[in-house]
Length: 220
Ligand code: DC
Image: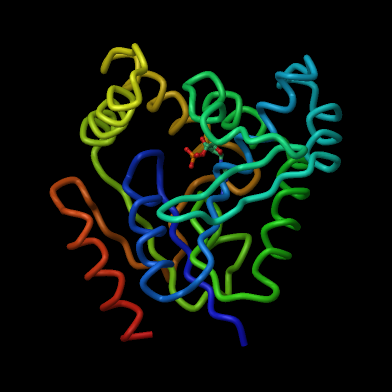
């Protein structure tokens, strides 16, 4: 039986950092499902398919080749063979990902890929609907959140470090808009699974979050 750890929560709650570290510690495969929605959004942009074109976006999700390749301390995202790791991290692509992720056909295509990815290996998978829809039977479910202000500050620090010129106000507004759309959509909205362990990471270090998750895993 494969082991699945599901980590869900809103943007910049600290999911990626802890999921990546946890996967490295356990020798599991790390899967960033947000990167897959971002890759679909980028493919739509490249092919001039508006995010309102449900059928067009769905076709893109079905036919795009999206690969997540583990590298030391991270994950490379390949879209139809091209490395788009940096390109998918812009606020524009983040908004696009939130918009295409509302479309049922896009979700169906990506959920199928996510389930396939976990067929042959133990995984730590992060996203919005992993514990509720993708793997409702996951061995351990974590719902990680943090205040909007703290999440915006974290993303702002990341962006500054990468040399992106964007203000804290713009990031906070972009994130609030995305949270609202991701939580209120009809299909697979962002929500805590009934059996998920909730943690607010606002005032916690990554080490403390990891320790919490490891404690829950022992208890499962
Ligand atoms: O985790 P992220 O910020 O990279 O995700 C980008 C968007 O993708 C997010 O705003 C909503 C969507 N998403 C989703 O709907 N379901 C997932 N499992 C992961 C991401």
